[in-house]
Image 1 (cartoon, rainbow, N blue to C red):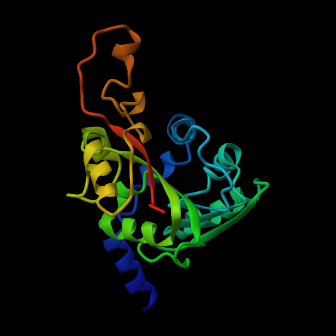
Image 2 (image 1 turned 180 degrees about the vertical axis):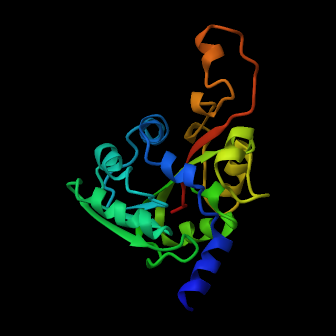
Length: 238
């Protein structure tokens, strides 16, 4: 397969983010209010149930901003970052040098991970599935590479946010694959993972609301609305 054919295949499997979206992933808003808060929430959901992690996979690692957060909160012996975007992988390798643990960054696709069966202890999958045209193939690969008892930390923006007007104007996502929080949970379960009720957190972060949380800040009554974000811990059975 030549470079052009590979690029065309990647575009069918993955919708490349807009120029604005690629810039947004480098901002402090993304790091502090989306990425860092998700990692902290995952640690609280796990409630010290994660220990002795050897191999941790950051799938769709972008420019590697999560590496130091994952090391700080989960103390893995090694982190592997994988991203389909070659430009992000170059930046991720620079970020990897800030970590004390071993960090390796690779260019690759979630649909064909270059790891043996049952070789990964934990997968950090943050804001990835809603960018994929074939979410099922990704979950099949997650199941294959996880050790029995291994877990996925799944964090996703839901359909109610992805289909909002500002997101549709400024970002790019595949059509007809976006899901609600409950649908993401059921999708993950359908591939053999176990997800307990206490391992799920749904929310409407301020950055995902049309008013950016100003009405709540002012103390105005809030209508019950569909969650815009879901975090879950999914475990491969032993």
